[in-house]
Image (cartoon, rainbow over all chains, first blue to last red; front, side):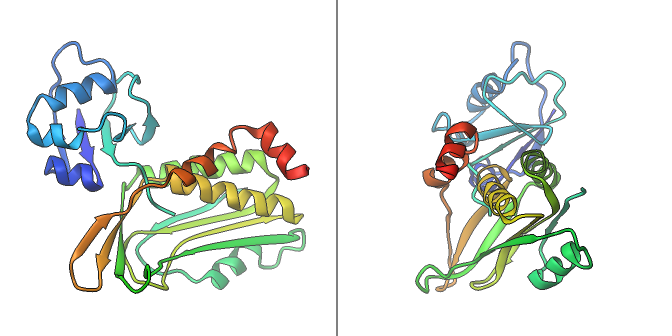
Length: 83
Length: 162
């Protein structure tokens, strides 16, 4: 599964994207965030404020409870500031 | 009606885009144009840098455009959003809506901008006049509230029709 990061989430994680092999039991976006936070302090920093970082699965906005089975690309980013 | 949606780093020309949307059509009675510009924030900013999520930006704006077309009888729709470094007084975003009568074009343009600001995957960062890179622009609660009013359609309708 490919993970991609944008704006200050990308800066805090220290990379634009990565391929990950998920262990069993990671079923939702919230599970994935919890697993990422355990991987190192850069992830802990990026996701420190619960509920701030947004997610998208295959280019569609999703909530933390969304299931990730079958996802090709999951993105994490701050609240949007375009327009 | 197919919407024109472009994500680009190059500047755009509102008059050219308006002519392309409505040129030669006798059935359109109203075109509303909204242009979002880069402010210098009281002389502080040298530029805004816009990062975007290629692929999702096009997809999400397409979904927002489709919602607008379902809600209002639009006869033309153009959305252009720039990315990259944009200097004060330059344009960032263009929304053009065309309809037979003005109300649909006005309302759809406002709906589109509210959703673009809160749902289109773009992020602004400040570049300051002293040459340093400033902060990422923070999302505003007011933008979220402006977007939420469209989901409570009956109340919004009552508000508009008095």
